[in-house]
Length: 74
Image (tube, rainbow, N blue to C red):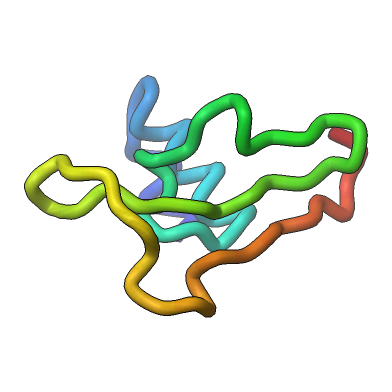
């Protein structure tokens, strides 16, 4: 993963770093909006996903709805 991130450029590099740090899937990453970020609690809410056709929808399973907490200062 480190080698892939090292070779990536621009926004794609930032996306890879974010996905590696949080464990979000590509479709979840592309569905993120600022309203899903709680800086006071250092939390990220996963509430939707974008499919391969570009349509935003709910996660495929209930387990896909989740909150990710950052262990670092945000």
